Length: 78
Image (cartoon, rainbow, N blue to C red; front, side, top):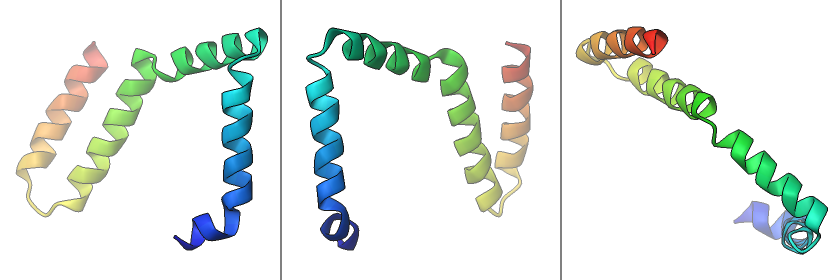
C-alpha cells in the first residue's frame, strides 16, 4: 500500500499513456505486436520452466526432482 501511496502519480500517468495510446493507430499496432511477441510459445515455455524449476528447488522431496528432470528432457525434445 505504501508503494501506491508514494507512486500514484506515475502509475496514473502510465495508465493514461497506455489507454490514450490505444487510440493512436501506430501505437495500437505497436501494442498488439508487442503483446503477440510476449505471448509466443517460446516465451511461455521459458516462463513455465523457470517457475517450475523454482518450485521444485523450494521443496524438500525428491519425487518432484525426478518429475522435473523428465519434463525438462521432454520439453527439450519438442
